[in-house]
Length: 64
Image (cartoon, rainbow, N blue to C red; front, side):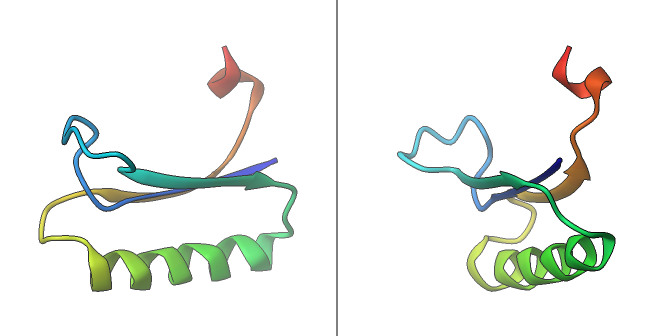
C-alpha cells in the first residue's frame, strides 16, 4: 500500500487543513509520478520551509 502526504503548513499551525493524504495500491512508476507531482504542488503553494511531501510504502512496521 502506498501513502502520499502533502502538507503546506507545519503540523502545529492551527489551521483547518494542514495536509492532504491519499492511500492506495500503486505500481512503482506511479509512486515516482505522485512524488514528483506532490513536490511540484508543494513548491507552488507552501511557504518556504513549511510543510512537507512524503510518498512511501505502508509497511507493517509503520502501522505499529
